Length: 199
Image 1 (cartoon, one colour):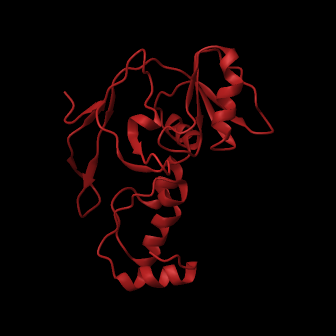
Image 2: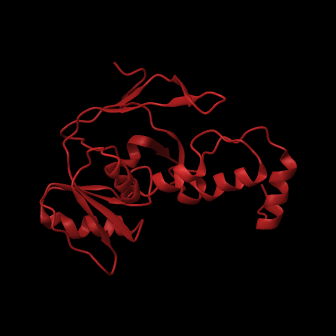
C-alpha cells in the first residue's frame, strides 16, 4: 500500500465506510490513539474502549488503580531513567517497562549482579520501569468476557492456560510470536505452551 499523509490517511479510512475494525496493532499508539481514531470515525472495533486501553497499557498506573480497589498486588516501585535508577527491592524481582507489550524488555533478576544489564534492557523500551517482587509461577489463565447490547457481561469464552515452570517462569516474546528471519518483525502467533480450553 502506498504511504499516505495523515490527512490523506484519515480521508481514505473514512471513505472505506468500514463496518467494524479488528485492531491488531499491539504498539502503544495502536492500542490507544488508533482506537480513538476509530471512535472519531464512528467505526466500532473489537476489544476494550480507548479509556480502558490507555490505562491498562501502563503497568504502574494499572497496578495503582487495582490496588486502590482492594486487589492484592506484588510489592514494587517505579524506576525512572535519569531520576531513580536504583531499587530497594530484594531479589528476586522482575523488571517490566511500564508501557511496553508482549514481554519486551522484561527480566527476572535473581541477584544484584544482573540488575544493571536488566535495567538497561528495560530502559530500551520505556523511560519508566516497574520493579516488582517476583512471585513464582502459579497458573496463568486468560479469559475473555463479551458484553451484550446493553454493555453488561453476557458470555465467557473458553479460557486459555499458558504453561510456566520453575525453569521458564515468564512468557518471553518468543513464546508469543514467531518473527520473520529477515526483518525480525512478528508474523504469527507462536505455537505451543498453551491450552484452550484450560482444564
